[in-house]
Structure formats: structure tokens, C-alpha cells
Amino acid sequence: MSDIDRKRAEKLLAAEGLDGMVLFRPEAFRYATGLAAGVATMWGRAGSAIALVPANAGAPLAAIMSDHAAGSARPIDIRTHRIWIDGVTVTNAASIADVDAAYRASGNIGPRPETFDQDACFRLLADLLAERNLSRATLGVDLDFMPAADFARLKSLIPEVDWRDASDVLRRLRLIKNTREIERLRRATTCAEAGLASLAHAAQPGLRAADLSAAWLAGARAEAIRNGHGLSGHWDYISIGADLQNAGAMLGDGDLIKADVGTLVDGYSSDGARTFVWGKPSPLAADIYKALLETFMAGVETLRPGRRFGDVHETMLATMRRHGFKEYYRGHFGHSVGAAAGIEEWPFLSHGNDIVIEPDMVLALEAPFYANGIGALMIEEQFLISPDGAQSMNRLPRELISLGTI
Image 1 (tube, rainbow, N blue to C red):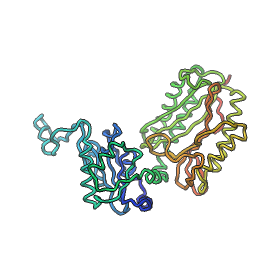
Image 2 (spheres, helix red, strand yellow):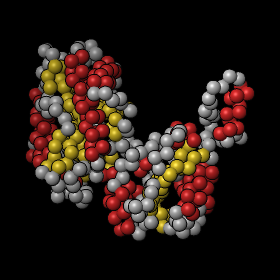
Image 3 (spheres, rainbow, N blue to C red):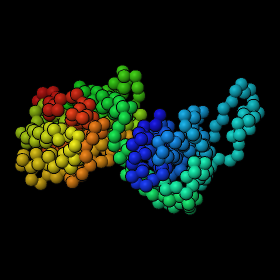
């Protein structure tokens, strides 16, 4: 099922003078069509999966994708192309001759490309545009993804379309989440936090970051199983101790553990962090964390509809300044989350960002500090913006969490 709000897309596309969008980024393809883009996207080249989103909200979506990825499901208008993977459907085959006959009966014959045939995909797109009376239209493309060589090839094969950049339109569409997207992000947050609880339970002197990472992932996966769904991915940035470059550091008395983690549910990634300490933190670490926590809470209060993204950055930086941090300057204090190619999704809670916070955004708010010789400290949570303010998806305590005894 598509996650695009077609009515909102119609307004945004009309404002840009576009008759529709043609999307090539795998994550954008899935967002538009609800379909997995398939393995032929692994090379980062445009064409193996293409989504057509007409500006008219009443016009049907369409997709071009590999025969391997398409399968038999046809929830929307799908055109398929052949990729390198050979396969055939057989029924009651008793011999190789029967298998060969199944190839011929299905029309699945002839040589396959080395990977995928980009020109063939663009020709399918040209046919689709002709059928939709869009051959001379003004169409947007997610140019923040498309390689320059691929865009040049697209324009040479479909020259009468006025191709324009629709990257910003797509980003603004994805910024407002629907109920399905919110639920995926909520589930991902729950799993990641269960992993943090598992990490805290497993921590003991002598363990390394890799050991804590394994404990975190085991807890996250167990939570996913308990809730009856899987994880489509995971990531973590876990550090131990004062030397941030020492990945092999062993946990000892007074050492900080910074755990910045996320799990993915149906491609949607959570982003959250907690800081632990084995035993008692140093007085300086405790003071820094106090400043970070107050900065974080100031950000939460500012994270509400009608305020600008830049207001959050200004408020949080000012709070750090009041705590004596005259040289600390964080480029951003958070970002949107979703199914972006990376963990952090545009836009960012950065200096001077005039984008206005709106209901149904899901934003990660973070207050980090890194210093070789002290360690890493961080608080990060994921918030659903409601008409009344920010609702946290997290439940773990925000305080510096002491583990064990010295």
C-alpha cells in the first residue's frame, strides 16, 4: 500500500508546476507504491525500479520493476523488465523437458542482461508516459538520488518531457507521517529500547563495545519476536570509556557507555540514545550530563506546532551556553526520522532552519557531547508531534544510569 498522501502531493506538485513525479530512489519507490524495489537496485543506478505519481490525485499510480521483484501481485499498474536472475514457475514437472516447456509457455525465454537493462526500463517508462498522455509533460525527478549519467540518459531517451527536480517535494511529503508510518516507528523504538535494557542488564567489567552491541541486538530481536514482527535492519554506535577511538576498550569503574541505537521495521528506522556509567561518574561527567539533560528538556518544550526547527536549535544552544559551554556548537540537535537511505532524515533541527513544526511529524531530538579524555554522553528520543506538543515514544529514564557498583 502506498504511503503517499495523494491530495497533499497534488497541492505540492501544482505549486511547483509539475504534472507528476517519476521516482527512482528505492526508498521513494517503496513509499510511492508500497512495493519492495528488488535486488537490482543494489548498484545505486536509476531505472530498475521506477514509480510514476501523477499530480492528479485521482489518476492511478504505476510502477516499472523487475520480473523477479514483481512476482504475481499486481496491486497497481506494473510493467516488468528482465534482470540477470533466471527463474520459472512449473507445475507437475517430471523432467527437464517439462521445465523447459514451462519457460516457453510463460514467454520467459531469451538472454538476460548482465544486471539490468537501463535503456529497456526507460523505454518502458516512455511507453507508460505515452499511455497517460504525459509524453510532453513537466515531470519531477528525485535528482538528489539520480546519478548524473543516468539523468542524461533518461533525457536522451525521453527528450520531450520537461524534467525538473522534485527532491524537495518528495522530502516535504515524507516529513508528515501517516498512521502506518507512525506505527512502524513506534515499534522500532520499542525494540531498540528493549535492546538498551538488555545491554544494561548484561554490562559488567571487562566487556567491550562489541559485547554490549551483541547484548543490545539480542534484546531488540527478542522484543520484535514478542510483538509478532521482524526487524528489517539495525544499527548501533556504542562507545566505552574516555578514549573514543579505542573500539577495544574494556568496561571499568567510572567508565561511560554511550549507546546510540536504532532498529528498522519495514524499512523505518528509530533513533535514540542513552548514557550509562559503570559505578559512579566523575564530577565533571556528572556536570556535563546535567547540562545536557537541561538542554534536552528545553528542546522538548520548544518542540511544538508553530515553532520553527531553528527555534529548537537556538533554545538548546542557549541552554548549553548558560551552563558555561562557550565554545560548544552542535550543527543540529535532531532531525526527522523515517525510511530514508540513512538514519537521519531531512529536515534537521539546525541553526536558522525556518521550517515550521507540524502535527504528525516524527522527530528525533538529541543532546550529545563527545570529548576524548572524558568520553561520550548523549540523550536522544523520538517524538510524535501532536497538536498539543511532543509525545515521546521512549520510556527509559533520562537520567545518567548507573550500573553496578565501584
